[in-house]
Length: 118
Ligand SMILES: [Zn+2]
Image (tube, rainbow, N blue to C red):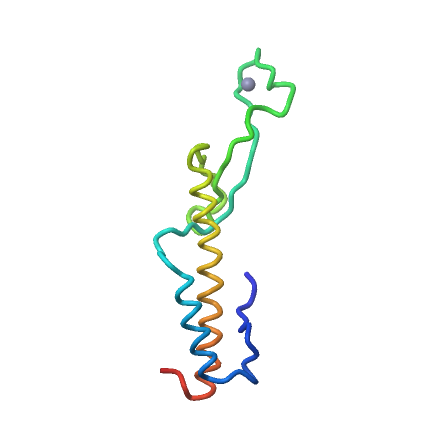
């Protein structure tokens, strides 16, 4: 994970600007229900039938799988084709929400240093 950083220079940015930035970041978070932490991977699979052409090739697919970050890490979950766009959207949102929270936290560290954390 990338370390949180304040986009506006904390040394020269006014407290008012930091508070405005914090407010703007909070607004980008939107609906926190629609997040998924992990990544989408594509894999080919062999069906196992000896007569199938896939035995000599790449296999069937590609099929989409979710690699969840926290829950039972490493175990891939099949993603039906009709849900790929939804999963991708949730993954993107998750990244945006995490980045926003990390920057809000960094702003709050700066506000604490100024004794202006409220
Ligand atoms: Zn096959």
